[in-house]
Length: 471
Image (cartoon, rainbow, N blue to C red; front, side, top):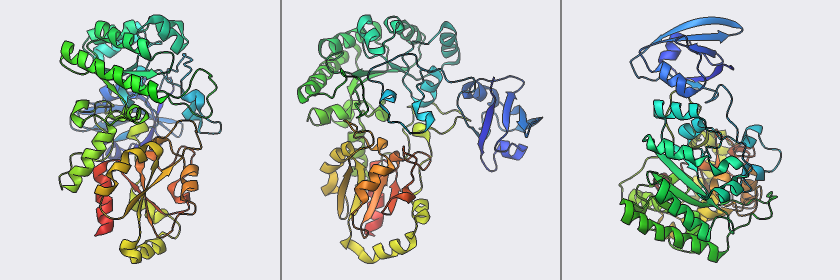
């Protein structure tokens, strides 16, 4: 079994004090060979930890003493040591199949691994789930999990997954729910396939078979310019409105039957349907916030709370969308974001440009650089934001199609949007566009043609950034 490798050691942590260093390979913990960070976490949770390490080809044993339950202070390079369980479905709407060539190899990996569902909120279809997996999930209480449902009709689900096991794999969902594990579901709606009467039937199936689901998110498929599936297309206005209507009808039915709404439609659907977003309390705490459900109303509430001097949310990922596990690499929503001051300092000529901007005073604009969908959410709030604020929507030419979320912007597209913009204005970029300091195309903010400040992607952080400029 491949060994886990240490990627970072927190200064002053128990691991650092015991002599663990970056590059060490973890062969065993307390004498047990572990296959993933979940098993690793169980072993390092105690007060006395024995690590079998390999360093420079030589093996050694390191003893770590710490408080019971305290973090070891190690981040590993991978969450799974025994190989990620890849997806053997061939969904026509799969976004990985729609990626352009030339990106990092890791972006093309299709996982269908329940462990990454538990750790990062990745959705799994359960088509590769086994009896042994069920025993582990139940025994170790690995929840919440996130499951792709798409349709409860066996034939439709088989067609959507292009996998005959799609017809039967939802039996695992029943067993997981029977064991009391928290599970959130998702339905990616493909026009003409699982919308309309099929979506109605799917939500009826949820009520009949899976009423213990914590939530079900209904989201539209993404269609990039690199899509090769002729039947995959964007929604018409009428189709998007029909999806919203169906979900809202079922929310009423679930409320009557279960006392909760259970199903929620994504923010993007309301934009596609040209409908106003529901009130924030209609999202019941936004448990699928990172799936694009309730983001707009949450952001609006954060902005207004910050303007009133009463922040309601901190920056960074929402808790509950993934599990915290000591040692798990900070990927996806957990990836470290860029500190704006570091970005300013790293930018060529930044010192000159900052002082020049400050001389401009209130004459300069605060320009929020965002994706097209983000601009649609921000535009109604512009009059409430402090200072001179305008939007710079960035069209996603890299992916094309109907891809408009800020998190999928590339440095190349942001650079193209910034070309020709005034160098005297101040540009704010949400940190969701970057992961470990890089855009999806591998470029950095320092390579952009204008100085940008990286701002955490929440309404309170934006207001505070604008207030700093006004003071």
